Image 1 (tube, rainbow, N blue to C red):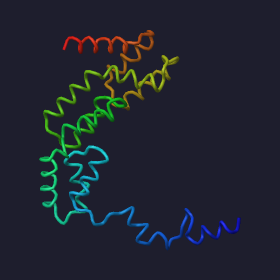
Image 2: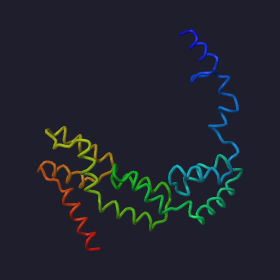
Image 3: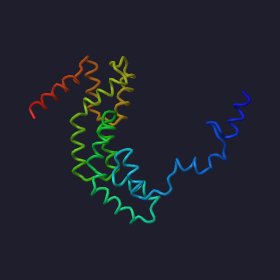
Length: 196
């Protein structure tokens, strides 16, 4: 074993030494100081969709002036790399299955999106609020509360996730009655799709 310790302390192993951390080879792979604003924006957009406001905030520390950011974002929007519609759909996809309409709307409001997109997202969330709440409840609890304390705990959990009070009560009422309206809701949704 002594040979292995020597190898690690010499900086050849996975641990390395402080001197190794300052070499150009090791720090150059993690930080890319030469990226332009457009390159940084594309790097962020390659990871996930961003709103215009979010990209402005992320690019601000790297820009010489605030005015330098807007032309870059305008170009990205013109070329289709930056899209408010895709951002909204991305947030709905990522957060919609785990959170209620209030919580998702609050996140979207932070990004100062066009009003028509926010209204469309709100309508889409309200349509599926009950089924999403029931799905979250089933994953977390799966059975009706046995005591008033347990009922309160389940209600607090769903409310904390951003589901409306009437939706939370409806989910727990359905659980108390042994009903699983999620099947009915999916049947209704498939009927709506067949008609539309």
